[in-house]
Structure formats: structure tokens, C-alpha cells
Length: 196
Image (cartoon, rainbow, N blue to C red; front, top):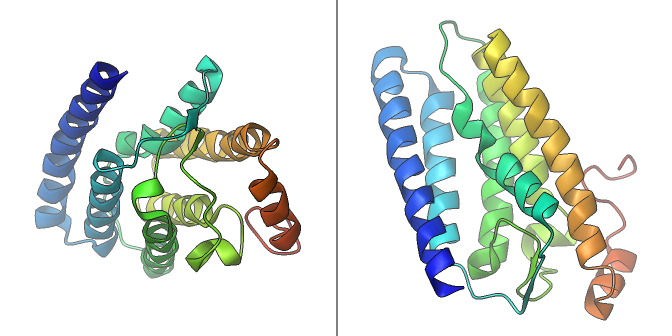
């Protein structure tokens, strides 16, 4: 288990180095705020992932792992494109703040696959059950609108499908945890109050 965790950490770190080079190079050329925000948000995500707390329980389902990896790292396939759209840049900022507030609320309980590191109910998690995923979706929507290409559209569609599936998988994983049942009763909405 420890060797697998080290291997995963190395892979994630190498992906982050490649991603950082790509997006920082793009920022130096385009000066788009969304590119720099994207870099900062994913850097924070990687840092919290690398220093995460060991879980009590982890999902052993391969599909849960696959969907979690797609939801977490598929955005690394986004590519910068020419153009500037102020509304899109604003969306990336809003999404980034929401995503970071979710990450900071989880702190070292942050993880990728469904795992029980304790039920977090404070910070951003007192408003919706999956604030980090809400932020990621808004962030990716903004980034796509700021960098519209067919490729980025396909990447964004996969991210949406993965995040919704991920939410369902995680809630199924926690379904037998009494603390999570009480949390669900207190915080009724998954992503958007009165909608979903």
C-alpha cells in the first residue's frame, strides 16, 4: 500500500511539472489571468494531495478510481488558445475561489478516490456537500469559455460527466457511515442549493 502511494505521488508530481511548464509558458505569451489561476489552483490541489492523511477506508472499486482520476486530472488535458473573454476570466476566478475553499476546508483530509478520512462539515461543506466539485466545474467552464476549441470542449464534457458520477459514487461509498447520514440530513444539496 505504501509503495503504491509513493508511485502515485511520483506520477502526480511529474504530471504537475509538465502541466506547470506548459501553462506558465502560455501565461508569459498570452498574459491571460485564467491560465495563471489554473496553475495556482492545480498547484494547491497537488500539494494537498501529496500531504493527505491516511484514510480509514478506501474504495476498492476500479470504476471509482477511474472516475476519480478523470475528475481530478482530466483538466490537465486543457490547452490554452487565443482570445480573451472577460466573463470567462471572471468565472475561472469564482470557480477557483470555491475550489480552494473546498480544498482548505478538507485540509489533509483531501483525497482523490472515495476514502473515509473523517466527515468534514465545516467551512465550505456547511453550504453544499461537494463545494470543491462545484468550484471545479465553474472553473473548467470558465477556462473552456476563455479558450474555446473543439478539444477543450470534449475535455470539459468528460469533466462534467466525471464529476457528477464521482459525486454519486462518493455518496454511495459513505452511505453506511452514520456521521455522513446525519450530515446529509443537515446539508441537503450536493452542488447547487434547491437544484441538485
